[in-house]
Length: 262
Image (cartoon, rainbow, N blue to C red; front, side):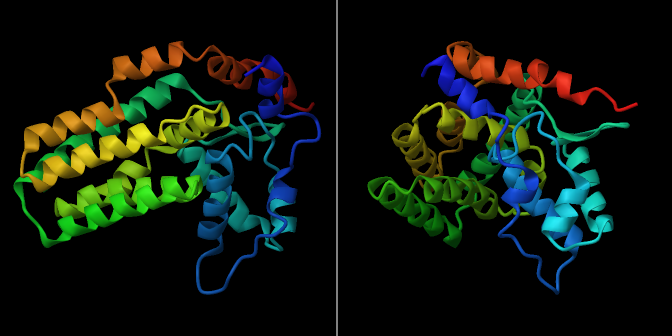
């Protein structure tokens, strides 16, 4: 990929505003408005539709969703707590840069907690193990049909299923709350055409086979091979200079637009 492609990914002055991205969204009754707005913005951020460093206008969000500012403000506070936006006094709210240290930390949390889950699933036979095989079959079909968004939805479903089979489903939401930077990095890799789907599927099969064979040690090894060691993650990133250049520009290049208004 050329440097011009990186420029396109970073966005030009006519990149989509938060208002235009929310133009087709609508809020529904029966659920808290702040929760709905939070999910909408979370999805836009982790899918890099709202880019690192981009201004997120509270007023524009409220107008696009026909909402008052109060639930918008509540949603932005939650996003700030999740590390996805940063409020700059007298300037505005901006999508945070992608931070390598945060990404590595999130990988560490996931590896530690999910290792415990697959080990527990392997020593605790459950009738729910059949759902692991079903998800693998669905992922195979998704690859055959080149339905890559579905493939990644199923990826999340499989990892959640490890905790369900282990009998500790309440741990998965704890893991997921720490994974925003992992999701953004995964989306970036897809944008830079880094395709590991066939490899991921084989790794998933290895984890499921180990669980169904009641082999906790093999399940742990297979999971580590899949998620990767921290050292391996750093080595992979060091081999992707254009992706690192994108991250660097998102961290430094957009600071000029954040000068507080006097």
